[in-house]
Length: 501
Image (cartoon, rainbow, N blue to C red; front, side, top):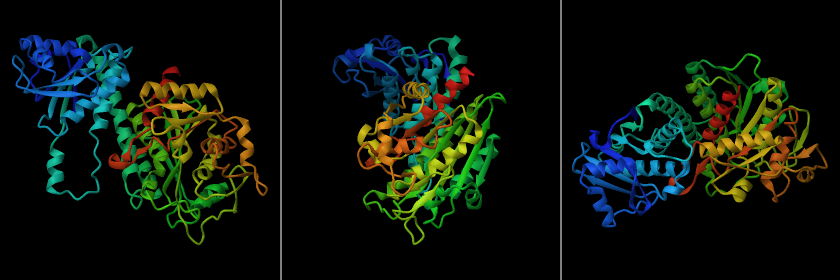
């Protein structure tokens, strides 16, 4: 999909389709009104007949509208004008892609960025439009046989998009917004691709290869530590998870150092369990295939690195990705085993399916050597978080309220929301163990909170936040697939930090 920025009149725009908006009660947007005037009230007459009322997400395709240079005009419902926020704007853009997905229009002109949206700048409106259009048109068919049907389907859909801005003076700013949106979309797409790949393809070794390839492409440093190095570091907790798998573990370290030399880095830590059977504490068979998504924390970190590399973001950022499988085997860790973490703290494993925290804790200890300004770990950590928040918001835990506020604001701005969860000291005793410094679980009640409490014990030397994305990183059912979240949140967070530095 190719994008361009234009400043033109909707009725004079030659294309397969022109996209304009209509508010509820048949109130025409500026672009829709221009077409209505040029067509002697053609749109108004159709709306009076009740074919469309402007409700959000609705659409109506018109052909051969008099007085226009385009073959089609797509009317997109915007909802109530007074309620038209960035969220409604994104929904309208997504509705336009859906309406055009199976039609014959491939070269289109969108006038949705002309709309007035809350306090959004032209740059942000254009960025969000490009981001949403690319996200909505994403398809994963990389491992399907290229049948004639797939080839025909691939030829359909949007090919070129011209984004109109109302003022010619805004075209340069719009170009910057377009670059922002495309960069973010590339990172989101990578995170989706990695999550959607089958676990026999997307192994720890595969993730390491992708990181090395990205480093070669964008010029940032990448190091991959193997089992021997992990043993020398004393990462007994991480190694305890992987010992039941034939696949070798990898510890991926990436460094995007584009900030000042004395600037302390932000460290992103991504959980990379490429398949989670639960280990000896075996999961039920139903929907176990979705445990290929247990590496979506790692995928989001890789996706975020792709985005900030595309942006050439002036910030120092380090990525740490512990990645392995959790398999049941004669050598696998058993319930009751005690592991010694890199920090020296011992952990009684009461449930081998609480393995994500066991690989993250060693990565959090390793993060200390970078003297970070902040550390954010991202993990599909607990089913309990899905019960608490559903699939709309990621769970946010932190030992620093200011850092939590930064992440919450980034989530709101990027439409990739999180919710600040409690992590009071009252919960810590639930992790007590008679045989080790701590247990790896604290019981069913408050499961996402006790998991965060566990991680907090390894993050006492810096400002730290934990994002539990178990409910947001992928979708189930007919729309099964990775979402690419929280790449938008993380990107917004890092961009805001870069702008302050």
